[in-house]
Image (cartoon, rainbow, N blue to C red; front, side, top):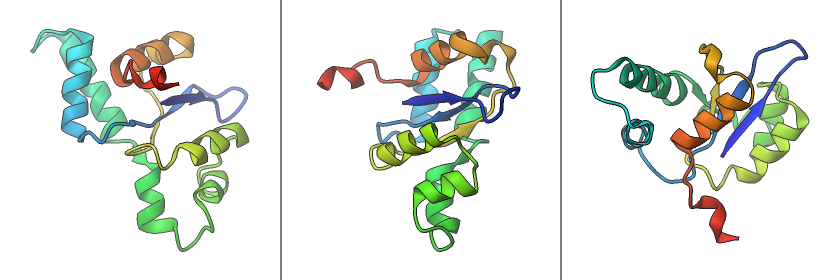
Length: 137
């Protein structure tokens, strides 16, 4: 699951990326590179590899951050998201419902202009989401 939002009226797009499968960061990297269909050593390969690092290595995993450092300070994960991360109420509600289903919750602020607006969400979804995840309904 990928949740797009803006923290302010004039701010850039932000995302919370919540991988559902219990994959390692290395396995998610391989999946992203495979889905992007890039050739090793190419500019596109480096771009997707850097995108992977920005999302899953350099971004804060909110779930792990809460469990390791803030569970004793905040009564709940939702309170942590509201007060410490200052997320909008709709994002907090969605994340608190999904916290047990995800292997991590990575707060990603893209530095790439092409990840703004609807295209950014579509691109990240193609690289990160399991296409069969919504079929269980």
